Image (tube, rainbow, N blue to C red):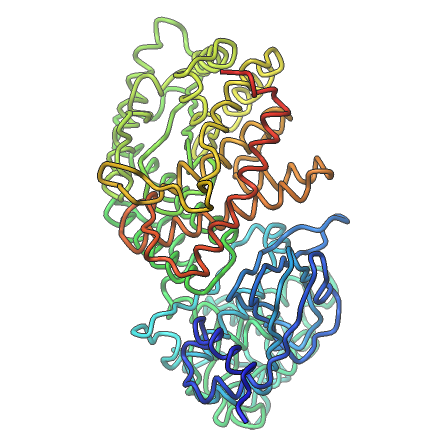
Length: 638
């Protein structure tokens, strides 16, 4: 007798990775063992600290939030929608759950047994690759990363033509070793002379018994825990993690993630009971993968020509595409691409300064505006930037401004060659209007705030989202202090900003259909930027400014901060944060698909599930706009 429930589960699974890579009979085997879980809103599937079970999960309907407890508050790490997989890491790492999974709304979740899944996908390298990536994604700990000021470095492309992850890892064939009787002093001298980061301790049969890294020396010798003359066996890490010589890049990376190590010992038979023949380091993996954040950033920092910067930035687009395909949380993607964009701009300024006849006459700061200023620029967009320089005597002003305008022209030209188009409205530091002294900028912002009009609101909506990319930090801090002090003097400015934030109502018509463009080249296309993203961007800006919060520019982070400040509206703000990330993801995918900004979406290219996800984002837009109308008394403000 046919199992109709299993067939329905199977039909759903086959539409999503990695199940779309399986043959139907294998997929049916998995579907027959799936446990269907119904969750009411706020039901908890598993809690942070719980022991792992034998299932990983996939959302069938609804959405599930994954949260982390930080400073006694629950912070959303990611949101899983229909087709999204979560809960993979604990199964592979054999560890307790690090996140709490809670139904964000009424949801149906499939619990997929890992053992049955592994049997069905045995020897399927594409599926294995997907799981390795899912593991790497779940291994990301944004709190640890933030504390250590590092970035996520695991990159696994999802391209059937890109076999780099499954080629044999290029490990070091002649590793540096020492015997068990060697003193730490002699081992350290050897490492220093050869300029290496680790040394393998071997026994008489040349089997690896331990490893010493720079970290071991720092933590155990420099701290005085052991004397420099101690035997290497006293401070080595043991036993070592080993593998065979034909391991793939993906295998090597997975082992390093799983055991939290930076080196794998390669032995003749892959165990600690055979001769050492090589060492695979994390650096070796990065060099092989090539296209990952750390490598791209290093390439940017070493660039001395615009052409090199363009090459590095193009790699970031490939990285972006693969991260989206692997369903890595958008908040994480935004942080990575923003850091790359800022690094590109920073290096473009460094290159431009070398072209100037003299060093800068006074201190200055380069400001990114708009989406780059909000740290949420993913695709190539028009340039929006400004420059502020230290105050100078009146007779020196024109000369000083001319210097920085010339510098800005070099920078904007370089950014244009890299792929960032010139701003059509000329809102760039090469325009004298956007290249001013600190006092002139203070006066400009005071005028916008205290005498708001249509033009002032248009310009301030761009300029209020600035962030310093290069130069003196004190100049920017002083400008920010002046802005927030001036905001205390008026409420009219907030009304103008509020009117701007509610000018685009809900993107759905009376019958819940999408409101599309009615004429022009974009006829029948949906403008996701003006109808979806901008109401959220404008709302977040207005609310955060009204609360005098400095240093929080990113839209989704602004909503998360507001959720912290207003517990009564926490659910609304978190929904807005999620909606912004979901809409940004749609826009970015469309931009990559059509090689444009992604501003206009061809709805026919979306699946039914994608359209439902898109519509789900519009509810918080309506609710936040209604909140603004009430809070800033906008109903009668025209």
